[in-house]
Image (cartoon, rainbow, N blue to C red; front, side):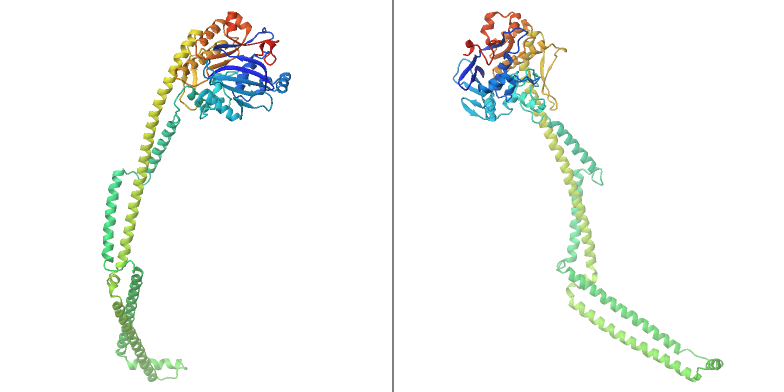
Length: 574
């Protein structure tokens, strides 16, 4: 896309000045001598191109960005006369069929227009992205791309070279811009490789820690065998349980059986207790019989009684009374114990009858109850639960180790994919940068003798591009030459790869470039399919040995104290 024409108008109808762009070099010339230049509008004319191309910094056409000083007279003129700029652009310099007209009101509260239609700032810039870059997705934005072609900001005269946006612009944003300009395949995963490697290390570390606990350090093959063995144990235990419960409704009646079993035990205990008490009672009766059979020396006992009685005046009984009482006492005890024995035997008989009836009532469960199979069942059931827990632990262990293995393999595969993609990406940017350097290096060499090489940096944390082998202590003129060589080389590069970009370059401040170099640059631009709009002093053109015919041929605009940008002489309005 080329610049065709720029008009400065007032009150929307009256033309103040018209500039017809040319192919190749276009000079915006300051005719004044070195003591008076930079006050006639040379740089402002270049800034108008930036404003027409979407810059919102319109006020800097009358405010010095470095000092903040305001040209109040010019500000008043712009707002009073409702001054606007109209820039016409076209895809072909010779054919105006698809020409687009861009209009921006410079006065406060003014609007932007495309082909006469008032447009919002956002839509205006989006449309410019389509017009100049065929970038319908608006990524990167137009205002982030155009500074690589218009190196005179509306806001400032000085500029950076590759870092040509606001200081807050990130390296990732610059990477997006230069990837677009150089047709470098976006490497979205370029920073992912290191992240994947870190994730892989974390997985390996976690697996190592897991294996260090308990018996977790088994291979998956060993765990499979342990699982099989444990499963066999579970089956065997289950078979034993089935043998106990076979033919019964054991599981549903388990509580009933447990209760009946406890009753059976209680009845046995009661019978045993009665039998024990009867046995003790019989022993006591036997002792009475033994005592009654003893032979007593009646004379000796009686003599002893008679000797003691005087000492116990309260005892009024005779020895015969005592013998009679003792016999009665023994008889009563025997009767008492016989009574207890009969009662206990009666109870025992009753309990045994109850037990007999209990066994008859629980015929179906009597084997389980008598054989204590419930305890055996509980034991086997606990053993089965433990075995199943062991099986579950082994299965969980296998799942965990399988997950670790799966994650490792997945990350390793992803790393390999990223490496392959990175290799393609590296091949892509190397191919693109080689093609650009085939233009850039020889051009700089032929013009100033330098040998710069543009290199690309993959690391997302760094700026994407740099120029290597640039001599230290490069002078301003040499640096400016290298920048222009870069811009010309890029125009050739874009043309070679059929990249839709602006076919123009806007520069200012070429006074430090040597005359011979300036002549070579002009010749190179004129032989390239592009335009270069240059702000330059008349005295620089003369000192560089550029003849008057060449100057007039490439002159876009000539300014002086009597022919200022917004206040032209009558001969320069059209």
